[in-house]
Length: 396
Image (cartoon, rainbow, N blue to C red; front, side, top):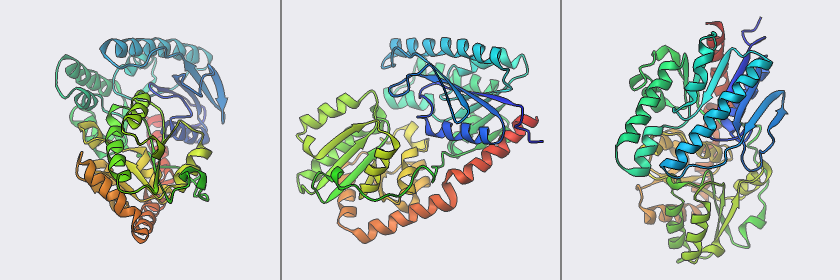
C-alpha cells in the first residue's frame, strides 16, 4: 500500500492564498494524486476571499489578513494576526480529521509555533523554504540590528523544530544545514519547476502591443525588492530613442501604486501597461505575445540566493530574458538570458534593445530556455523528488 493512503497533510501558507501560490498548489495536487488527504490554511487576498473552498479535492481554509506589513509595527500586527488564525484553523482542521504532517510554507519566522503542540501528538513538521528573512531584512534596510538577529534566531528555531526541510535551490539548502544545523539527509532540494500543462505556448494577441512592433513583458510581485523602479529607468532610456516598443507589467503588490506614479512622473505611461494580477489565460496571452521578458530584481543578498519563478515561466514559453547578474538567476536561465551589470539601467536597456534588434538571437535563446525546462526543470521532474521525499517523511 502507498505510504500516502490514509494520511492527512496540512499545508500552511503564510503570505499568499491558494491556489494563487503556484508552487504550493502544485505540491498539494501532487500529494493529493498520490492518495493523501490535503488541507490548506492561507490568507484571504484579492480574488481569493472565500473562507472555505474545496478545489480538486483539496480543502482550503482562508483567514482574514486585515493589514499588510510595511514597517515594524504593521509587520508585527500582520504576523500576530496570521499566527492567531493559523492556530485557530489548524485546531479546526485537526478536530475534523487528524493530520499526520504540517507542511509550513514560508518564510522561516513563526509558523513553527503552530506546529509545536501537534508535534507532541506525533505530527511531523516539514518546513518548505521559499524566502530568506534575514537577507530580506538586509536588502530592505541595509543594516544589521535587533530585528536582523531576531530573524536569524527564528530561522534557527524553525529548522530545529522541523523534522524535514525542503529547499528551492542549493543556496537555501546550505542555509538549512549551516545556519539551521539540520541533518543534510533531512534537507531536499525541490525546485519550483513550471507546469507545462499550465504554461502553454499559444498564438500572440496583438492588442497587447498597442499598435507597436514589439512587446516586452514582466510578471511577478511588485514590491520594493523587485526593481520595477530600475525597469522604469531602463524604459525611459529605451523610449527616448525608439517608440516601437510597448511594455506589459503583470502582477500586484505593495509598490504597485508607487510604480504607476513613477511612470507618470517619467512621462512614459503611454508605453507601459499595468495589468495587475490577472487570470492564467490573460497572463499566457501577454507572455506569449512578448518578444522579450525581463527580471529587474535588484542585486540584494536575498535576490542573489533566491530562485525566481518568473525566470522559469519565461523559459517555459520560449522567451529570451534580460536580468541583472544574480547567482541563482544565472543558474536557472543560463544561455536563455542576457545579464546586465548590476543596477546599471543603461546596460539593462542596451541588452533589451540588442534582443529586440536581433530576431535570430531571440529565437536561439528562447529555444534554449524552453528545452532546458522541458528536459530538466519542469514540475514533471521536480514532483518525482517530492513523491520520494514524502515517502520518506510518511514512512519514518
